[in-house]
Length: 122
Image (cartoon, rainbow, N blue to C red; front, side, top):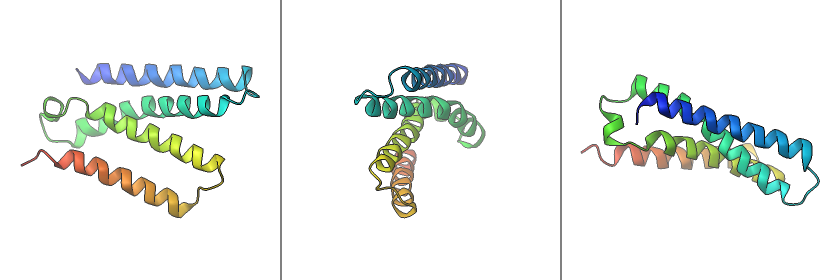
């Protein structure tokens, strides 16, 4: 898939996720299921916002032919950021988030992505 389509998909995901967040906060906030809905919509929105940035950075700094070699890289990198944001939100809700835990979790996700980027470069 071409980079333009990834950018369009990412912006569409971000727009729909942001609209869902707005609707949830303004219409159904006191509902107990709202916490999980907000975390899920925040993950989708962050994933959608990350895909265009990731597309630009991979286009600029990755080796030629990276898109043919790893076609789902942009979606995977966006999903990491969305999952990280949802996990941070859940930990903050439980009052368990501090700078040390945030740095360790971000480091684990960065190491996972580094593993995926370097596993097939032999």
